Image 1: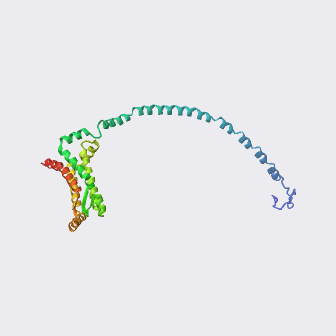
Image 2: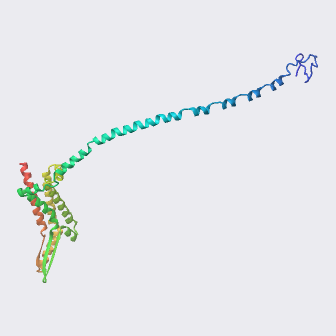
Image 3: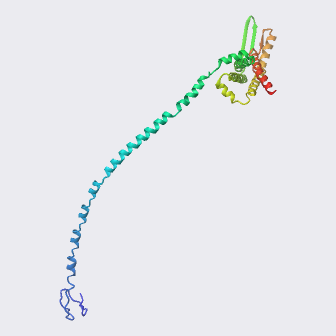
Length: 289
């Protein structure tokens, strides 16, 4: 340290300055004991931090919180009272009062009240209305005509008789001509359509369909005309005409007894076309007049 009077260096432990003889004050000496005796550590150790943490009533506050009582008291009564009353009261009366069963029974009863086919009126009309009878027979003949013979060959050679007869379906197969099969199917389908149109006056199901067809009289005439076109195409078919001509030439050249023709099928179809067309064309002409 230095002397406070002259600034000379004073050795440690000296009581006076070696330069000026000034006594060295000893007030500054107890600085280190004051720092050592500072009760910092005892104050830090005696700090009641741990005691304050242990004495915090966290566990008693969690145990005394009335959470379990609040959950049990409101939830059970609120769940039981509103749900049972709201489900039982509105749904059961609404289902019983709904008029679903009466609405389902009324149309069924109305449909059952009328017969599916009024046979009495049908028979009475056939007896009193001859045009209706002719139209019905014509539609039936058109339908069954493809199953009759459209090629017929009968010969007698050396005392033995031979006969060949083919309907439209078999004729198309034997001659390898699909046109005959197509004509047969179209005549069959159109004949069934004409029968359904005839029966529509006696069957409610068919009457509803017929009522939706615009200008049904014209449609019926067109159907009959289409049948006539298919009849002409089948009757004058080139393969069929060539087969008939070849068979007739063979009978003539070899002087064989027999004959070859179109068979009865075209005749049946033509009678049916005439019967189906007569009433419809007459009605259409009279309606225009």
